Length: 442
Image 1 (cartoon, rainbow, N blue to C red):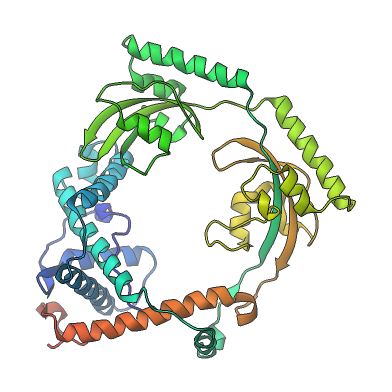
Image 2 (image 1 turned 60 degrees about the vertical axis):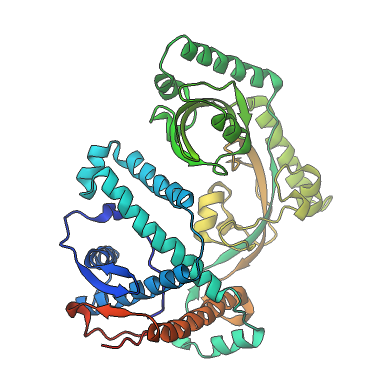
């Protein structure tokens, strides 16, 4: 079993019944509850884990003991976690739960916890997760692997169990996002100014947000965003929100997402809860048509060899990757390779899997990361067929696996040493557990 940290996972909302609780293990001055084990066991079963129940519970307990050892070490070393920082994360979880269930009463019905009890439970769980994660990082941050070690790691893998890497694609793109006219910007400002005046005259901000806000995530909740701290919103929005007093309405502000008015609901420590109305200026149909025609012309010029795709991207593309000749970068791993799922998610309309290497697509409509209308053309640079993992094609992924393995080994060695110097007591229900990575005196 690989050593892994205890994570909060989804939330304590997974429980549907009240668990009889008790202490399954004591680690230093920290404890592992029976309910912690049962909650993780239930989640594993929901995700398809099978096998002997007690063996699975022992594996869960071993992981939790390691987590508590890391917490104990963090406490001994005075690793910092401020009350304000912990409160921020607790409030974030609580607000997510309230957004899902609507009211504190519904939340209690779903979880079995009153709001204050749930806050205490989240505080305990998040403190454990954050401290153990930071301690693990501190213990393994200096671990490195050489190319020779990567080769040795790969050579020791069971060749019959090597994963099959799905077909992947490398491509470049040219994006043209038309500029929004000043007349359209003035139109949106005017409509938002009228809504702001209606609020100042006594109409409910939440009702107007529901009717007019173009932020679908918050509009259905009367524009309410939930509690957020500094650094969580774009700078202009954050500055305006934190400058307000409860009930106060901001002037019109502009962000990369459009134009907003904001109403402060409540300030709690270093966080605020606010609602907003977002209105998004639209690109004109004529400007979008011009972008499409420009890209279709560029595609024809590229296919005829009159200009390279890279030069065209540098000259005409409005995307951030224009200076790199339009090379697309996968945001999930930072590489230039996309699997079928990633292509279907972000480039479905282009039809990249059906293209030939070197082929340039027709112009297709898209949404930018900030939800603006644009057009793009794509060139498929290389198609990597499905294959069994190997060092030549998949070195980066194998390097990451080798590095993770080396960090696991260092953590395992630390845990074995630390267990000899840490008070660990198991309840009678778990005293016969056989652990893979920990040696605990019975």
